[in-house]
Image (cartoon, rainbow, N blue to C red; front, side):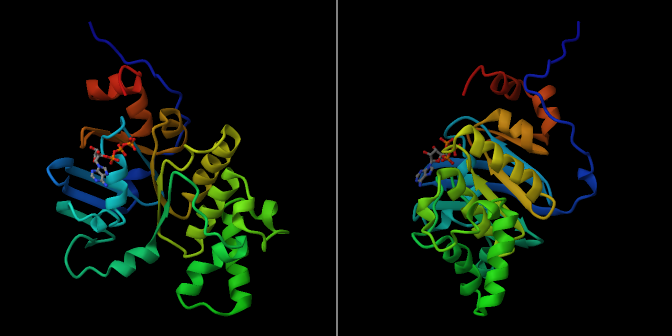
Length: 271
Ligand SMILES: Nc1ncnc2c1ncn2[C@@H]1O[C@H](COP(=O)(O)OP(=O)(O)OP(=O)(O)O)[C@@H](O)[C@H]1O
């Protein structure tokens, strides 16, 4: 008797053109230790451009560690050791001599808790371009408007650009943080549970925004919300105890996973 796994979570129809896309990140046999804690184990992932890739898995499985490694944020922790490769656009970012600054201008990061600067809405967005040498007020104005429009928050803030970003709601602050990323014209946006501190309406806005942004950017999103992964991602990687158990098209992962552990996780049997 054959058994088929019934879809647990509704996945919207998505275009399947993945095979023809280029790779933005490739991790090859990536390992990471915090002292003796082996937090990432032989991670092989090929992340394609202009897709949304979701990283899911139970608490402590290494999701945040993985996404932070893509931006070399873990290397500031003294106990961290890594082995293997992370190839970003053809270059191993873990190699000595890799120009770290290059990564900073190409990869934007959005965190769990909105973290605008304690400055005006305008200054939050203009800050990055200024650091990169843009001083002309007219050009900065254009970047600010374009970035806020890109983050679907222009209409809400256009008349209050000089107000402190802290005066906005949490959901608006998160979109300001996304606009701040867009202002540096990144190639990739890394999002670490970007909606977990938001209410359902703000969550929906950010999810719609992610769908829109993938036309121009590659997005990697850590989420503990499986419905969210199913709604917005093209590919999903299921992590467990520091390993990638399964990485596939999101509809395959949520309707017919290959591994029993994935099936158990998405059906809510653990995690
Ligand atoms: N700064 C750190 N120093 C030491 N160990 C850490 C550090 N950050 C994470 N770890 C450990 O690495 C492992 C993976 O943690 P990580 O935060 O990547 O998991 P996660 O899947 O993102 O979890 P969660 O869903 O709870 O955020 C855990 O054992 C954790 O205790």
